[in-house]
Length: 260
Image (cartoon, rainbow, N blue to C red; front, side):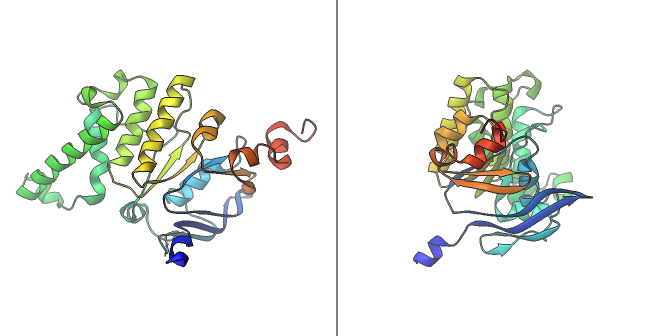
């Protein structure tokens, strides 16, 4: 039982990603345990977003292995990775501006929908039932982020904070087991960041495993159980926020060797 509990939920083994002659991720190995809330930080261009793109298979890895729930996933297509229980948000939101708020979240329900194209096209019984279920689930996720009353509005009418909440609500509609967040509070003010952190902690309390990238240290400091620091695609430090903020390599990466 103890061996099973200690086995990594997500594991990257010596992962390399190159773009021509540029090495974006360089022999990176990290682990995340089930139920953890882990943040990844690093200077601009350190390879943080590339890392999430590799896990979700938006980009293929060049070398190495990625494992999730004891299954190797780096050779799987993105839709199969989603079906295994991995969902993500995006730094640039990627909302569907021609669809309502609730329709945006319903898009995230595709992981568990089984009706075929003809069933959907002719509005047959299974497709209608799934549509109603998707609507109910989307509304449930919107309420988690205080967006239930804006379900029929267009995303363009929402504030930046609400748009960011909408992006996460859409990811949550897939009922993921691992949620990847890419700079979820960029552009928000201090009070909004605090509210955002409270929402993330509530999701973790319900059993969700969360790996997130962030440059706003007030969020990283307040909610992270563990912080992984990368620079030039390599892990340079790992530990609690209190531990990594005193690390000389971390200080050098952020401030420059002369200032460090």
